[in-house]
Image (cartoon, rainbow, N blue to C red; front, side, top):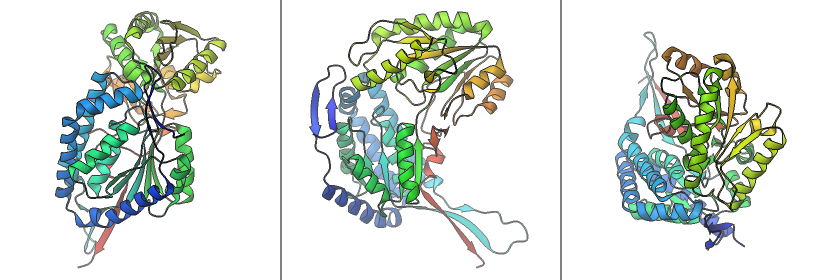
Length: 449
């Protein structure tokens, strides 16, 4: 039976099944991407690539209702949130269409006053790239990988999550309808074995993965054996540090939004709430009340399997001595919001990523302990700092081991700002100017002419 199934998490109904790719289809995809790379990246002007990306953005906006309905059916995201995701995806394509040529411009090298000749860095595409995408943002994840790399002149072989085959097909149609030459963007319903073979195939120049740290490590191992460039955007257990507040209700509002966005199924969602002791009791009381009150409005998790996994993690934490305040009972993929306290450093849950609407809250004595707890994780994706003291905010930001730090705000992602982490959250960056520089040959041309 095919692994590419559309299963509505709200009902458990299997809506549609897509056949897995045959080896012959995979070979045709690789041939097409490699053939297109020789002309797309080297014979088209940046302005022409930008025009096609603008067409992709426009088609996302024209088809936003259909794309959002597909997302809702595949992984349960409420329609308003799914519409917002599609709109953000369109903004990303527009950003690279507008700024791509400037970001690809030749970069002169200052050789110093006594050097002869000149030197310049030229940016050239690497070739076909394999993108391995997750289920939690079926449109946005593709945009932040495909947008910059198509603008660079690379071609894309896209392997989406098995539970998002309809999104994969709909977005592939958009690239075709926008006028991209054949082979520039190819969708494949590949098996894990076929993915491993594609990573090792000499026609694939690089691989980008968004997923779990376990999946990222498996891909990186194969890529490393084959000397392939990899970008990994993996899990996170992001700290939300509360050091001070002029308005505790505003901080709590931000904390709830940071934990419950996408029902907690975001790599960079706040997951560990670290609060100084003079604010702890007040914060915990308000935060818990708000989280539990919001539970009735939550969408389902992406699948029953995801709910099973989260339930096992919570049970393990409670068996280890943690206390759970919960909004009710689980129903299939619908998981009640909750707040865990008393999670100690010897608990397995302490260093795990809880991918769902359950928060961990920790009391700390002050700034130094807050930083120590925040950094006491194998992950290092995002982080959040709330304080009324500007100097403290930037001081703590410098001490946090993460790829991103947000001060006194949440949900601040945009096309211009780079996204990525350190430690087991992966390496490399997407979005912004740095998203254009990952799969690029930064070629030095040194001349005495």
